[in-house]
Image (cartoon, rainbow, N blue to C red):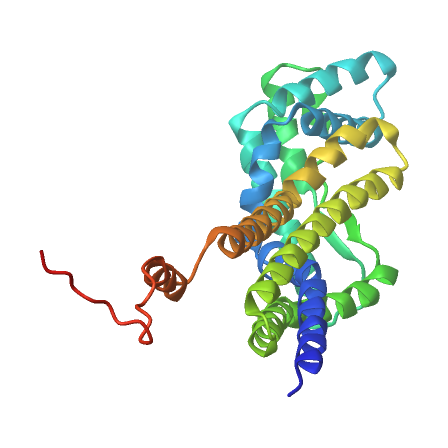
Length: 301
């Protein structure tokens, strides 16, 4: 195969491999990170101690209790303070983990079993915990708070079909995109006329893909917070988004560092490295061979 054709084919394969890097990382994150209930609950668990998250939950749950009981304005402050105090207890962390597990299981079940209705979660356990805490604090009328099985919509029915199609695609792509990217990169390096340059190009493309992934995560955060109707809950939503995408940010930095390190190593070995034959030739050239046309003669004293 001509050298020019080999270089063109190598460049195309390497470019395609580097283009698949950020998409492969994103698909693998969805398939093996978000889709795993245990990992999701573990990721969300530290947020139970986040002040912004606790504040948002206290506002939401407190407003719901006030609406259910119909108490007057003087009682609203007591209810909100009691709920806020409850978010600092170990019981709240237990309820938080159980709630996240229930929500995640419900969403995954809806995405996988083909159901058409909205995804809902029952908030009765959380209401019961808050009622017990208010009763222990001797808050008036706390014992009258009804513990109803209120189904809260987590995922609207109109968004379920669209998300199900996307989830099915990402579940398959989570395995095949990274494998395809590696195979294309190896093939591009193998057919290259100069493999050192091919490795350098692959490493730089990988670093560029990692930087693109990190930029996409940052832009996604801004767009997600901009779509929220309640600006007061932006800090809590930002904390949740940061917790969920922490793995993606780590992967993006690893890709950048790994790519730049390999590229720098290739450049250094190409600039300062010398093959063994060169040094042997250098030593041999230091002592020129005798000219057979002029044989050396010995002079006797």
